[in-house]
Length: 297
Image 1 (tube, rainbow, N blue to C red):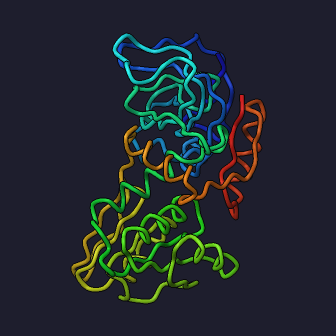
Image 2: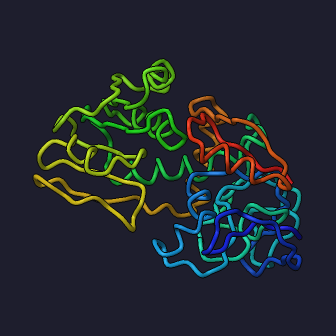
């Protein structure tokens, strides 16, 4: 079985052969159909993430996956071999993750992909949609409060705009001028190309602007980031936190249902064979991508 790995001395991800996997009692074995490449994968593959997250020298790559269940552990009752599922691998320390031909995940980390969601595109949903949902859920319903989403045209930002608007937030998206139509179409009622100081009740900083984004929060408001090990400094009574995304099959099932209904849009930039994974990593590292590149074994 082939898997994509990275070493702390980086910088390029590389393919290696490992033993075939077997599910334990609460796990499912998935034959990978597609796996998305995310900025965090590029960060890990570079070797720069190892000291930040305290990773071992050798780690696997990949968070998202869509695929067919090949085998299940004896305690798995709600997923069957042959099911098309999507899931999230949230353990950065393991040597085999989703950029591979097979992956083993806890059954609680996956959800059956409903009709109406393309089996390849399903791989682009878990990390980004769950990050957005888990960042917004602790904030409660918007009730007309103001929310700035930085990187609003990005993968996490786009989901955040749609989910927040549906939850009653007055959403402003921060992005490049040419992304305004898409961001407004996703649900934002406002759009800016530069943050206004002390103007928003909450800022969800998917673009990692850090101090610049904190400055956009009103006094006593909230800042939510996406890099837990390195939060920006608080100021003016602004509370600072960061979402530490976790696998949750129940939440993912609801997000996939909202995707199937058309409420949430999936965006796929293209597909790349696992053998040529480096080209997808290079495209993402170059920036300006709209939608996820998917690795296909």
